Amino acid sequence: MTHRRLMLRRSVVFATALLSLGLFTSCAALSGIFKKPTLKYDTTKFIAADFQSLKLNVAFKLHNPNAIGVKLDGYALHFSVDGLTLVDGVVAQALDMRAGATTQLVIPLTLRWSEIAAKIAGGFSKDLPWKLTGDVRMNTPIGQLKLPYGVDGKLPVIKIPNIFPSGIKIAKASLSGVDLDIEVGMSNPGSRAIGIAGFSSAVTLGGVPATTMRLNDTLKVGAGGTQKRSVRVSLSTAQLGIGIIQTLMAGKGIQVGFNGGAKVDTGFGAIPLNFNKVASLTPKR
View (cartoon, rainbow, N blue to C red):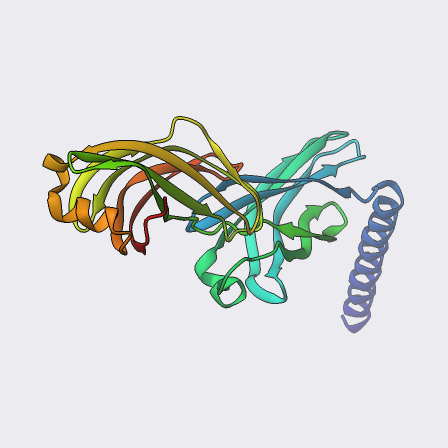
């Protein structure tokens, strides 16, 4: 009985050893046959931007050189702007990589300007350096693989432009009325050139509704720059009142107000912008 048990135990040990050897040999064989997929950076596209956020897509190309499919589980990422970490985590994303195929992996990112407010505070802002690092994770016949990646570049800073009354000039004046050249100022504190179109504004002089101004063309305003454009308007004493006319003719300071809207082209689409500005200006002749 004891001999029979001993023989049985030896048989089990031998069978286990054979099974382990078979598995080891199988894994070793797979390791020799299976080729590691490759990960290559493709493009970065800024897809949308407004005065609240900037959205971008960072794309990679994944190539599976094997005769069998591989499944992507997700990716880890660390996204920073000018040294400030904004995202640090792991994203689950199932993606089938077919045998011999190249698959695109897109990592979407959103940057909210409020997150980097301290870095873009104040006046003119320059492009900011950004960096994205991490790894792509996939299940393969030889276990889980991690493919590292790293990308960096420059982010355009989109800031709200300033539209304001910047000057007033008397072209012609009499007790019956005045012809005025009212100047519009447009400044861009952002890091990229913008276009401002569709300017339309109600105008007040000394708090009195005076006229409506429009600009039909688009003004290009460079990074950190200012553009000015004058519009001539004819106003009667009946519209403004004799007091406003006398103030203008005397060359005294007067409150000029704008209340209107425009569209700002950031290069990523047109963004509506409303403004309400008042400036104290001295009429010129």
